[in-house]
Length: 415
Image: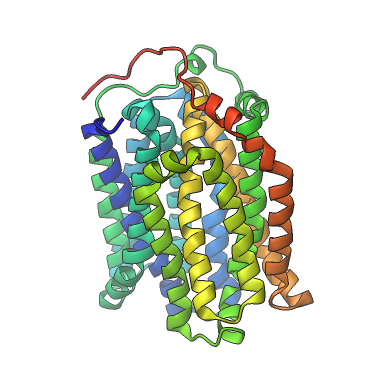
């Protein structure tokens, strides 16, 4: 494995993903700035978040069916060009001073709908692009590129470009999607789901087939339920973090932003060394240690008044999140039949998005009723209960069996 290389096809996929993350990040920062420049109505401003999350709930599951029915590479290219058109139209309307909030939210809806299907297809494409033994490294590099671009570079860049001209962040995003379309289009070969193409059924039936298969896999089922449940408590915690930072930690806006930087730095580090660290401590202990870190984060947020302690906890959580994603994505890609890859991946995304939506609402409700630290104590209790309930699921024998080589399959075409 040490001598194996990810190869040219992965380099093109990684570059496309990283450029897209940069463009998406700048637009994500610029969108609320543009709305705030037009109105100070909190409901109108917050509607942007709803528009961004809604496609994940509406289209994740049918998007998985689509990714299993067609050539995934061509689907990704088509989605990128549709997003280029939508963002370019928005940028031109802004330059002409004819863009309003309704147009912005319509474009965001289109872009995020595309992101749902694009991400599902991209995860399904990866096992055909890199050797099976390098899935952890590939997932780590993809996650690391996204972390750097979206959480470290896109924020200040998006704000700077918006000051120069409101249309610039969206024009940049259109440009990055265009480059992504070209790079993905250069991937050699076809990337079809396979058996799913032979028998077309209703979307509902195909979604149900993917769900049944996932539910029958104890390891993947447990990880999917965990990510949905833990996303509830995590998003609830992040939703009121600004209040915790200002009221308990005494931080200003810069200090509050620094907390997210701590998490992003941990995420980048975890992504870059993830494959080696996972190999050293085993996937079993990567997952188990991550669950302990999750509980520790909520405990630190609930009990500590030290910004340094909270920052360190967020750094550790960022590293854990990167490692967890590497293990979870790699296991799903190893275990799922090619014909079901899109639907199984989209089911996981749907559950994760559902957890985020519930958590965003729950955090404010719990904090308003029981105090600012209440969401973190709830998160700690839930994390401890999860550890107790799932510790034995991730035993070495079960995880090792998941990593065993499958029956040989027809190799993907080489660039």
